[in-house]
Image (cartoon, rainbow, N blue to C red):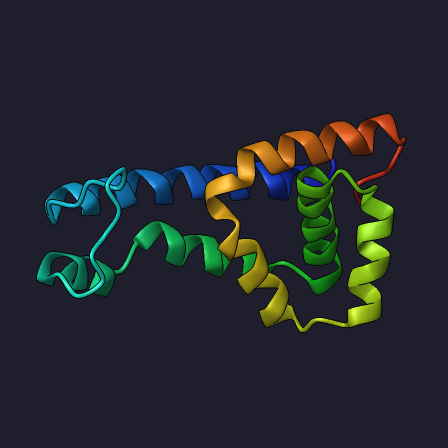
Amino acid sequence: MTKAAQAIERIRDLAQTAARIDAELDKRHGIDPKLGMDYFDPKSIARRQETNAGDVKLAEYLNGLDVETLRRIEALMYSGRNGTPAIAERDDLRKNQPTKDDVVRTIMEKRVSFDAYFDRGLDRAKADGIDLDTF
């Protein structure tokens, strides 16, 4: 397994842990995510103030990766979302020159959709014959 593929698997595992913690926090605060949250409801305020340890671990892991690996991961993620080839996504990212913090934040924001995005992005990369560690 390539370094990027291993990183994606670790990211997915951490995201699943964060999702379980989200569900536990919602339950603890009496929040039904299917109904949404009232921003000013005291339960919602208390819930927003809780820290999800899974998100913290995911952010720490992402911050430990080098920026080129992060950009490849982001490109694969966007490829899975948009259907655009990962190489084109990577080229756009290089042109825009996002900082490492920007890349980490962008990846974190897509946490709830990782499985679908990465499944499609990795399938597309395989079909396109992309080496995940060098593209």
